[in-house]
Amino acid sequence: MTEAVEPQDPCVERLARLTGDLCKAKSASRKLQTLTDKIDESELAAEAEVFKAMSDPFRLAILKLLREGELCVCEIMTAFDKPQSSTSHHLSILKRAGLVKERKDGKWSRYRLSDGAVIEMMNLAELLTGD
Image (tube, rainbow, N blue to C red; front, side, top):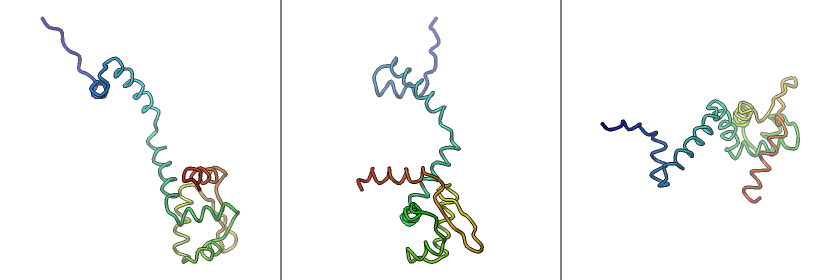
């Protein structure tokens, strides 16, 4: 009688084909599974929103302007010669992503960076681009 062959994990099979070593493939597969189990899908989505918000040149320019302190919408739109509706739209995206905070001051809305991490992210982007 022949022994039943245990079905192989597709990940192990792929890694074994690529590396040519079944033992290393099994070990690598276990390590990869442990690492991927730690990844939270909802956190990924939230983090992606932050990067999406920062990916627009106008929104990034707003963040750079706010690096110097709190400003109202009218000051931001004037600085960039953009319409109020467009400026407010971009600010709402930045706010939804948690990059800026809004403070009502009478009929005006004043915006500031949410915390120092936003400045650190911009500094890192500048380092990566060589600016």
